[in-house]
Picture 1 (tube, rainbow, N blue to C red):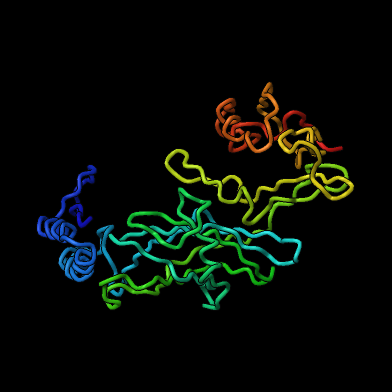
Picture 2: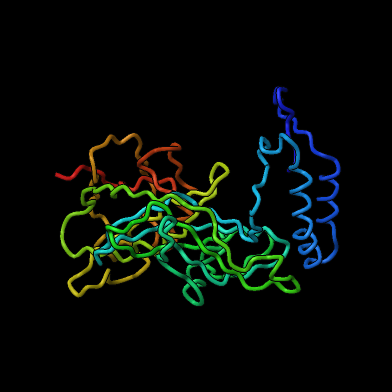
Length: 332
């Protein structure tokens, strides 16, 4: 953590640490008691930063800390660049995921998250109370709302806010507030702090064609907190969210119901068997077929075990099946 490479010598990947700094850090984290160890860490940090980064070459060290830096119990980052689209309400909806990692040896309770324009400082949205809890979960338990982060855990705030299309910011910041930690001075741990600025993708969304034809189609599951939004997958050492903007299109019957009969059978729904059209020009590189029709609500796990398309195929979904099967043709 506090190592450096001497100037003028090749970096062979070996970093030399100062023994005094390394020993002090180990002693701090071995202190007994959560509250005691946390306070000890916070009180010693200033000494460590001063003693370990002093010297003429401290600014060249990749671990140098600038004066005035603040301790942040929750480390904030975003899963991807925030992107927007225009919804049927006429507003631009900014959608992204705020990841919060608990970096202290105690459970942290998230109290509020405020999104601000990084340049103007104007508030754009604020989550607290029930709205914050409904929008927050642990990364590995997306269906269980919570604002409590155990030590070393990662939480996700599933962000979605409406903005006027002509007021999309170039960058945003997050002002994070936590509840006081038991037996820890508020002078040692800031309860409210602002994270680093996050750039926003201001480019207009790509407009594609209609994937379906005919009347009485309804989006019964769509952005931004439907059944697909929280489908995180850990792949190749990082999180992926392929279904952020996924939509479940359902064709309704004359009485505006999505189907009649046995709800477990696909044939009970008029959507079943309808052709799906390509939304843009392209080349089909792989198609998977031969899978049996699954009962409604039972398919995702079985389908994933039965099929696996080549990695990187633009025509495969998160389950590994082609979204165009059983028919795939370009719209006339």
